[in-house]
Length: 579
Ligand SMILES: Cc1cc2nc3c(=O)[nH]c(=O)nc-3n(C[C@H](O)[C@H](O)[C@H](O)COP(=O)(O)OP(=O)(O)OC[C@H]3O[C@@H](n4cnc5c(N)ncnc54)[C@H](O)[C@@H]3O)c2cc1C
Ligand SMILES: NC(=O)c1ccc[n+]([C@@H]2O[C@H](COP(=O)([O-])OP(=O)(O)OC[C@H]3O[C@@H](n4cnc5c(N)ncnc54)[C@H](OP(=O)(O)O)[C@@H]3O)[C@@H](O)[C@H]2O)c1
Ligand SMILES: Cc1cc2nc3c(=O)[nH]c(=O)nc-3n(C[C@H](O)[C@H](O)[C@H](O)COP(=O)(O)O)c2cc1C
Image (tube, rainbow, N blue to C red; front, top):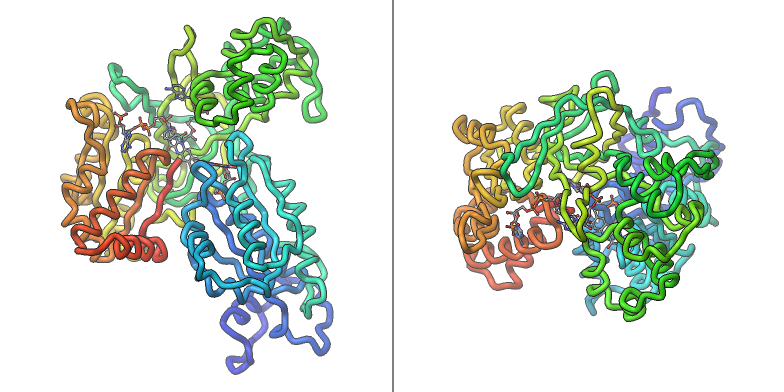
């Protein structure tokens, strides 16, 4: 069906016009309930704000919008950094969908609005009816904290909670869908609506996702650190030929791993089982060994398992740590201690196979920032992955997914993958603008993709890479490629920080500060500032260095430097992909 002609002089705002376009385009052959005297111009606007780091909340916000349309509402989906605090007071019907990052913190795009909402000057929200959907992961101490904080703050500012907050763990799809299906009718209740009589949505999503991953083949698995390096980083190329899948530089690839068979065997032995025991899992019967290999997280212990071991063992140290509520001390105790360590440490604690499985979390995918450009490599996706391997308590320990990729996948194995778009982390549309990229360690991954993208587009904009790792002789990964990019002029500037090549640590933020005047000049030229890699130490220190550079070289006060950085964030010129 052709979209109807909307006369230019019709009394619609831009938003309504855009919505009507989508509304009619989405109709296809669906029946439209006669609007009678109701004009679409009167339809109730449902504001849907998302706080999202890796796209899950953003995707759910779009799902909620599609559902809202089918209920005759006019959805307005916005990233939280597109909204000023003053606008919130006019959002009579409001959904907040947010994940939690860091340690109980807001995702980057929610930070500024959150800060504004907590100032004394924040407006009253007595006119606002809202509900919150919180995304998180119960393996973090502060589960869904950002969503909890928004829920409490909106209520404190006088907003009316129309529907209770729902907190979702990593398997968020089902509870999120339930929340959407229950909250939207409430938001539509009593509204003047224009209703389409089915609930079909029209967002285009990949057919491949967490529940239906694409079975891809590994084509390249190459160690890119030197053999005598203190770490092991690998370059992977995974074929997506024939899948109809595509990706953008900046996206992440999620890999669904299976567990190491030797670890499975050791756990089965520690449980005193044979592994052949039949166990019900998700409605199927499978052997204990197969269940442990493919369905459960068997490295990182769940809180429930730790508590149960503490209870059953009566161990004073572990019990004391749990009772004390001292999260840092507990984290120190648990650092690097896996499930097998706990079973071996407390041999007197016995579990039946079924009891044990009930205390495990489902095995989750791991995300990896893609290190290739989909334009240059449409048939493959490249990853740059540090293999997690360490010795502790007399045994070798391996990270589940990084060593699944390294050790367990060959060219005949299906690697189950799906993409997560990262719409805020993109090469600038304007090819002439400078890009500053800070990516030590595996943080280099998306910047290899960005540089390939710029090369493909023949973008004339300047490119500056800050890279670093432990030692230059062993850990300068992609050295030849990077030096060729520099020699060819694609990489305008390269600054390197090898932390362990000298007594004093040198990090990327030191190089930023050394080159502060030029860095500030690039920002003033409209430059974009990208950061990728470790969230907990590096990204915080780089953020501080960015503030320092702007303060010193922009001749600003601390408050002015904060404003400058906030403006960069608002303009989406300071974006991060940190983990
Ligand atoms: C958006 C996003 C993008 C990412 N991109 C990349 C990327 O491009 N490249 C990349 O390599 N990773 C990336 N990661 C991290 C990646 O998802 C995994 O977390 C990483 O590969 C480890 O997973 P694993 O399954 O191998 O280890 P897990 O089985 O999850 O084990 C990790 C755990 O092992 C323990 N541990 C690790 N090292 C030690 C040690 N030395 N001593 C004691 N204990 C230790 C810690 O408890 C740690 O939490 C990204 C993460 C996100 C969220
Ligand atoms: N949250 C997470 O789970 C998380 C976050 C990041 C990385 N990782 C995992 O850790 C493994 C290795 O990661 P990686 O190769 O990306 O990086 P990495 O080995 O942790 O570090 C890369 C470089 O960054 C330096 N560095 C350390 N602290 C820094 C700071 N405060 N500021 C700036 N630089 C700092 C390191 O120096 P020194 O080591 O010499 O101090 C090293 O030179 C991977 O498995 C990765 O997935 C996990
Ligand atoms: C580095 C990192 C830190 C996280 N911190 C928390 C946390 O403190 N609390 C929590 O409940 N979830 C935490 N999560 C889980 C995310 O909130 C969860 O994966 C969510 O689905 C991400 O949604 P998004 O893609 O919209 O950002 C963290 C995830 C990562 C990768």
